[in-house]
Length: 362
Image (cartoon, rainbow, N blue to C red; front, side, top):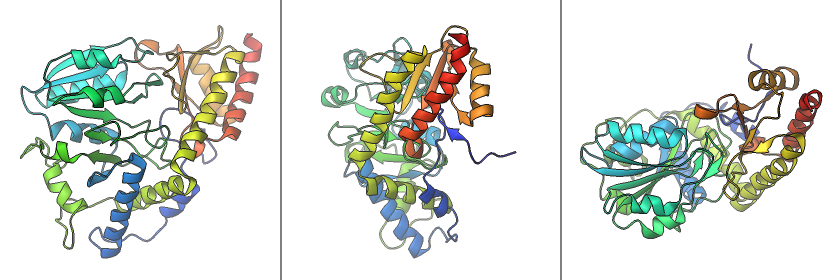
């Protein structure tokens, strides 16, 4: 049975904006229809605003965030290239795997889960890498890694940043931070169901795109002729029309609210959680000063069982939160407050449910 009244407060999909749900009901156009191409162009322009960039090649990859990650590596990395990757959670590790499959010599700069990576360690890891890659908001730990020092001191390296959990929720300043390549997902702070991976590529990075990447589907040489072409567009693939309707609508909601207002709304929800959860016996897990407002990680009070507690929240209160991954399975909860879900009323509902849940265990 599919439930429509669940409050999604895990690290995965958030509740979509109502305007997005409505957008999915629009009649489907052809992917080369002039009206659809106009919508695609407007979607890309909205993405430039949200990414805070003037990059011409700014568009949604027709697949989820993992495809954005793969596109970011296979188009720029060839066999033998040195890639420095920051690893302090699941998605830093995934970056290493994807880069290695592209033939790169990977230098992993590892940090304890729950702690941020010192940017200087990444800069010192190799004198002349092809690429430095890091996750801005690590979904598995709720940690924010610093990006600006990397952009200011990267030298000749390309700077690649995973912004899946940060875009639309906290400041992401592509041009100001001198980021070359970034990708995200639709299902987090943009308030759109999963299915697309917004991507932006600097002109500097476009000069280094491989002439024939490993992947045909993710080849930016061909994709750019479809998403940035004027007049007749090159036919690269059939775009997911309804998903693009949804993204167009979701970006419209964020921009109508105002990007800084959206950041502040996410921050207010995070601040309330960070203040109140310790009062209920949940200890904040991510490193202080690097905690994400849109994804709060906590250790559990003594006596509260991980699976039983999350199942009770889901079945009794209709609230879904995420469990820990890797070394903290069963020990940490990941509480998402993203997109349309990032409302103080949802935070207060969760806190009330948790208070009832933990009272017998205190």
